[in-house]
Length: 288
Length: 98
Image (cartoon, rainbow over the protein chains, first blue to last red):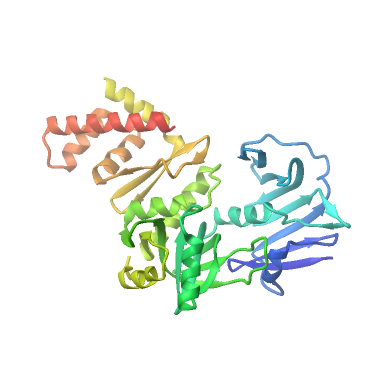
């Protein structure tokens, strides 16, 4: 029986199927084996037996249509995922059982008999749902590791996250962890940063979290340490939420509150030149 | 009393908000169409957090006023005035973000 394991954010996801499995290129560097499984994923071909579309409680929409939608049941959550290239086509029907941390994914499209259970966007949704019950956040951001210290730059598109990461890489030989979607995970009272699979192949990376920055374009470099609700609201604004379930939002708020109590957060006005690195190293707050 | 009407309306909308205490402050976040909107949050300071907790626990204006007098060194008139202003602002925020 085809079976593969992926290590993402330090969690082990095991996919089992009766038919050949296919995964996107971005997952290949995250393959692992013989690990203790955290999340079990049963992958099946075609529709569930006696399937009928459930009542929908939440829809994730784009201007083009519904990307995915869900039914929140008593025993499990049913997620209907549409093909991002043709939103008329249902791509996967996935059931998440929160109690035993398992998924059943019915894959409705296949190529040469092989099924791709994690076809976008279901892969990131699986990590997202795990974030609603485990001690981690998924955030939009880039991260760089320098001297075992990982700095995260978080913000919306266009604020200079990728530019900042490249400056550190080019001028300090820092390692870039990711320039889009990060996992910030608490393990034994310490915080770690992980990348997640992208559409391209990128090696898994992790580092110990040192500080978080929220950059914005400014006429001069400027840093301001954020405390309490100011830090919390900034961090939550860039955390990936779907928020259809109040308990999930509350969980993310609890995790984010723990993070800001241990890790210094800063608002950062940036002029995107190499001088900003020296400025950060000199002015950042080492303490919460 | 108008303020008790406001308080009841805030209490009725409580399910549409999530709140988190951070130190003495509180972050109040609206759920729009059941989705958290972290760009429309409200920050409550220590006093605001104190009052909001009493509102959320189902107290009315008179009960909250009495609790303020018990806890803070403030005159009855001043407490009533400050509480009244706060409830008006909280009500305005609540109805416009629920």
